[in-house]
Length: 179
Image 1 (cartoon, rainbow, N blue to C red):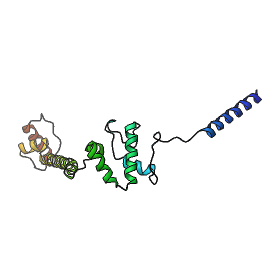
Image 2: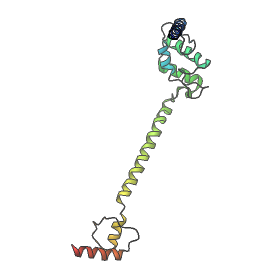
Image 3: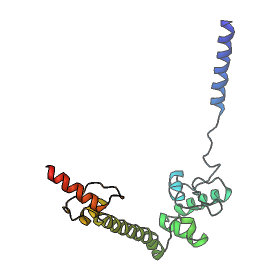
Image 4: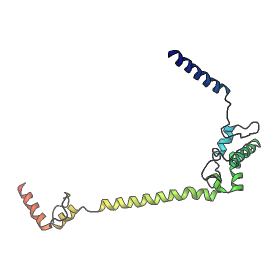
């Protein structure tokens, strides 16, 4: 029995080694062809900032469609021509619209993209600050009852809502008399 398990494990190891030796490296995206001098890293750096107009929200760098493969090859050609990252993004925005860049290309739209959330955050901060200010100025129920009973204004002990001010006044006089 021991000999059988040893032979079986040796055969398994040989099959595994044979499969590993005969395997071929596989391209990450299925055969993208780049011009000389342009690496896949260069292409993916630019392609990760451009989005497929067919596969909503998927970066061209990771999209498996044939259209995105063609776009990656086009990016590689543009890089080989010496185009910068911004020029390539502008090229695709001109051809397919600003939605493929993920961020508006025009300066006015880009400013709005950042200005609107910042201004909304500032307005929300002002509203919260005003509310906190109002809450801090509001008198507590205990202070209202104490004032109604003509007691010390520094009185700030919790008092239930259903306490009669006259009863509270009598109680406070009794407690002050015992001190």
